[in-house]
Amino acid sequence: MKFKILFIGLVASVGLCATEVTNRSYNRFAISLGEMTVTDHYLSNQEYSGITLGLDANHTAYYKNSDSCASWLVYDHWRYGQLINSSYSAMIQYLGGNAGFASHYNWHPAKGLRLMAGGAIDIYGATKNQSRNVNNPFSADIQINLMASIGAQYKLTWKRWALSFDYMATTPLIGGMFVPEMGQSYYEIYLNLPSALNEVAHFTSFHNRQGIKGNLSVNFILPTVTLFMGMNHNHQWWQANNMSFYIKELSVQIGIALNLGIIKE
Image (tube, rainbow, N blue to C red; front, side, top):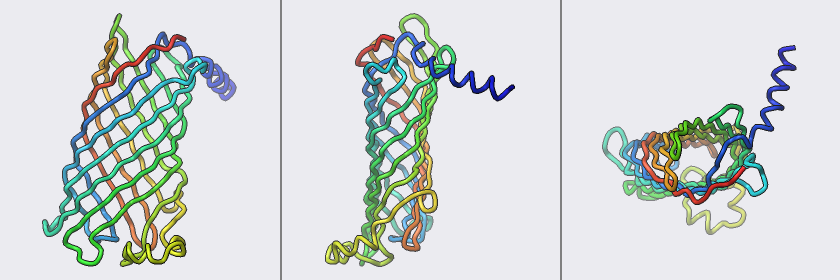
C-alpha cells in the first residue's frame, strides 16, 4: 500500500513541472578563487597544490513548447593554477577547461522547489607544464564523457525580486580519454600515428574514471539581473597505462546572470 501511494505521488509530480509563475532564460558569468591539488604520474609521483583562478560561463533556457518541463544548458569552465609540490622543489603550471551541453527534466513538487535530472556531453582538456623535467616536461589531458546530472533549487519570492538556493552536480558514466604510456614522448606518439592510438586512446567508465563536480550558490534575483555567490567542488580520478591522475578543487565564486526573458507557463 505504501509503495502504491509513493508511485502515485511520483506520477502526479510529473504534471507539476509547469506550476511556477515565471522561468527565465539567462547568461551566467562568474569568477572563482580557490585551492587545487593535482597528481599526474606521467610527470611526477608527487602531489602538487596551489591557488587556482577560474572563469565560468553558461547559458540556460527552457525548450520551447515544453511547458517548462525540459531545460538545456551550454557551459564552459576554465581554470589556471600555479601548483607546487610538498618539498617546494618543483612547480606545475595548470591550464584546463570543460565545455559541454546538458539537458534536464524539471519537476516542481512544491511551491518554490524545483528538481532536475538529466545528462550532459562534457569535453575536458588541460595542459600541465613542469619545467624541471628534461625529457617529458609537458602533459595533456583530453577527455570526452557522457555525464549524469542532477540539480535542485529552492526559491523565495517577494514581489519583483527573489532569493534562491541552487545546487547542481555531475558525475561521469562512460567516455574516452587520451593517456600516453609512461615515458612515452608526444613526438614518439606523433611519429607512430595512427597505430599509436591503440596505446593512448582508452574507453572510460566506472572501472577507470570516477568523479563528482558540483556547485552550490545563493542567488539574489532582480527583474533584469541576478547576483550570486557560491562554492565549487570538483574531485576527478582516472587511471590508464599503470598511471593514476586526479584533480581536486575547492573554490568560492561570485558572479552575475543577465535575465534575457520570461517564459510564460
